[in-house]
Image (cartoon, rainbow, N blue to C red; front, side, top):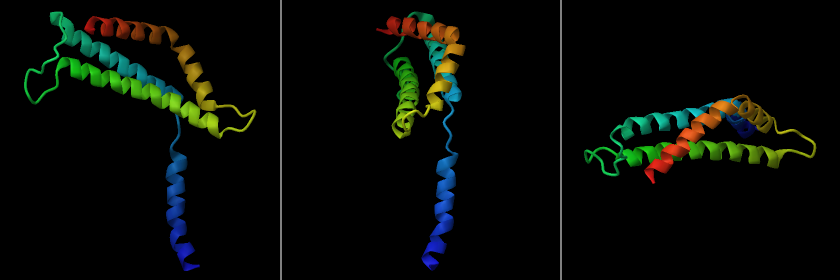
Length: 131
């Protein structure tokens, strides 16, 4: 009985932390849009000379290409996180239950559709300039 009482507070604390981790579809979408905007801003900064350098100016720094690649990778990781969250919730739902995260994500996407199209089109154009 003493062991149960000893571990009970620890289990309650762990349960509290895991249950407090809320998924926020609008915030996740906001982070993805911000990452694309950041990529586009850095691209404009680096492309002023008409070239995205693949060699670093100093040994301590990353090249312009590597910096943009890192930002793009972070964007794709955010999108993968959103897709994984939707899939994880879908897997836990019982028949007839609604995936509220998916519903919120779709609503947020529709609400910001013009902004998303604009920033993603700029992102695609910038990536094409690199290749």
